[in-house]
Length: 320
Length: 122
Image (cartoon, rainbow over all chains, first blue to last red; front, side):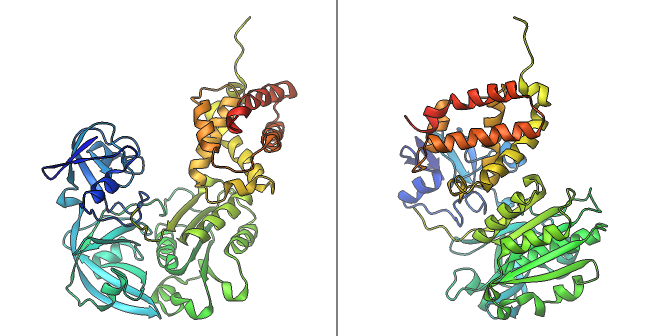
């Protein structure tokens, strides 16, 4: 299969994705998850068919406009492809940042034009040098319009994005991808319980979802399970999110590994406290292992998979 | 012979089978002899496959092929007739809970059993 990219032709081997094929020829596209989540390797087909795989995880509107994900695309014909149009990346600047706890940083970014999103969705930040990482939004659209779009990130020493943000100056340029993900509140069952459970920096976006639900008139019980390795890692206690959101409508509960607590057991017992209500909805956000175990536990406890929205944070995937 | 509506149709078609699939998948996942085969599996994708499996077993419209089944199960070490029997048992129990008659349950089990060799890669 012949792939033409920016005027040059590259031969793809059988079974090779567009991303891997280009990399083998020395053409490196931004890429983080290699699993169709971060959308940082988005390309546009000018001719040819990228196959189903590259389009499965895209919004239908994007797929219909010729976009596809290079990491999952195995073309079925020769193709000519182009980088995603400039309007897929919105330029933004760093407004401010604040340490929420050891190793956890909040940043607020101001996009050059409005970026529509729903509280709890994620998008990919990109900076010079092709570095791209996906983070979840931790505030509401109305707040973002006033104060900037808020993200909570775990800072890794030497982290290509998190380490850079930890020392970047206000005004630093950064690109914003298109918000996506299905972990957000939809009105319609305002009296049904909401069970939100997350680990690490997954708690920020979940708190935003909970507040978004209350803002949209949700009246049912809201239970928030915040998982962390130990009490010292519970960053949201010093987060104003708690003060803004900790009204009578939200019951907070921690789940600490150091106390031997297990997220699967905690969500099961919280779901039981809600009497296994068929109107209950769950939102799960955080480390992939915890999210998978919590989802399985809730399903086994009787919750329909259709009532569980999950956003698993994937580790950076090494180039294959 | 007069055309008889499939169990799939009599059960209520796709929406009913979607509900039945959750009951069935829950039984399979809760079975300690089977659950390890589902570790690390994306549950949303898995339930779509389970729905296709139930739809086939109940005589509904499906595009299940032996090749798909062979590919999907090829990497699962240690799969045996016992596992296939357990899955068919959970299918029967699911249908029983939904009020399906024993004749139909036997018929669905026979269709499910017809893919045994594909699943076990022989």
